[in-house]
Length: 513
Image (cartoon, rainbow, N blue to C red; front, side):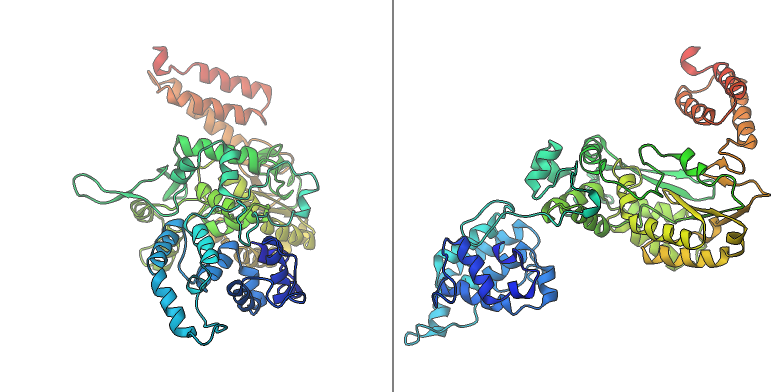
C-alpha cells in the first residue's frame, strides 16, 4: 500500500508524508501545506490516527493491516481476519448495516454540526465511494493488482547482499506469481497446501482420519525405536521438485554444509577430518522436525519473496503429523514411561507444521535454515583451532591434541549455540575419537584417508554370501544391494570391488528362476 512505501524512517510516517503519498495515488499532487483538505476527510482522519502508531507497530504492518484499519479501524490480526471468506462475511454484514451506519452517523454528528468527526470505523463514515472501494478489496483481495484507492502493487523485501548482484532465482510476490513459476493452477496449489487441515470421516463412523498429501512410514532404527518418514504423494512431490529446481537450487548454503549439496557428499565431509589428532562428533536430535513453518516462512521472506508467496510456499513445503501416527511413534520411542516431558515435546513438534523428512525440498530448506548454526559453529571451530563440517544432523569437529584437552569446553559451547539456534544435541551420540582409535565420520574411517572399513566390508561380503546360498531372493533386494556395492566401491581396492560384484551375480533373484 502507498502508506507503507518507504515508511521505515520516522519522518516518513508523519501525517504530512502519509497524506502526500496517498494524494499521489489519488492523482492529487497537493499537500497539506497547499490545501487544508487535500484528501477526503474520512481518509485524512484515518491517516492521522495511523501516524500515531509506534515504530514497533510500523515494523509489523502489512498491506492487510492497513486495509482493515482503513476499513474498520482495527488491525488485521486483532480483527481475527485470516482469509477472504472471513472478510466476505464481514463485508456482507457491513453492507446489510449500511443504513444503520448512516443513522448512527447522523445521531453522533447531529444536523447542526457538519464538521463533527466521531471516532467511527471507516465503513460508518458518510463517504460511500471510499467505503465501497475498500469493501470491494476486502471481499476479494488480490495482492499485486493496482486498485483505485491508495493501493500499490506488492513489493519484495530487500535484495539479499550475500546472493550477489545477479540472482538466478525468480522473485515471487503474490500467489499468481507462484502459479506461473510452478506451472500449476491456483486451485491445485490451494488443494495441495490448504490453510487449514481437511478431514474426512470413515463411512463406518470410526476414527476421523486426516486427508493428507503424505504417506507415513515408521522404519526401525539401529538405536531402537522407529524413524518417521513423511513422503509426499506424487502430485505434491512433483510440485516440491519444481520448487527445489526453480527457487532453491541457486541459493548458496554455508561452506561447512556437505549434506545434500551439489559437489559435496559423504566423501568430502569425511575428507576434511583425515589425519587429525582427535575427531569429535555431535548429533542433532530430530533435525527436520525442529525446523518449524515459522522458520521456513522467515527464510522465504529473507530470500526476497512477498508475503502471500512466502505463505503459500511454506504451506507447500511443511506438514503436520496426524495424531494416530504421533501416538504410534511415541509408543515405540526408546524413552521411559516416566519421561512425560520428553514425550510431550516430541508430540508438540510433530503436531505443529514442520519440515517433513522425505520431501524433496526438506534437505535444501534445512541447510538454509541452519545457516546461522553453521556460521556460529564454524567461528567456534576457528576459536579452538579446529575444523568443522556438517552433514545433515551430523556435526564434526577435528583438530590437534589441544582440542582433545578442551573438548569439554567445546561441548558446552556447541550445546549452547545449538539450543540458541533452535536445535538440541543428543548426548548419547557424542563421540570423542583420538588418533589411536578408529575414527569414523559418516561411516568412513578417516585416520589416514577416507576409507571403507574392513569391518564394514566383511559384513557386506557375508551378507551377499548368505543371500547367495538361498534358493531365491526377492527382486526388490537387487536395487538396494547394487546401491550399497556402488557406494562402497568408491573407497575399495579393485580386487575387493570385483569380489563383491561376483557375489552379487551369484544371487538368484525371483525373476531369474
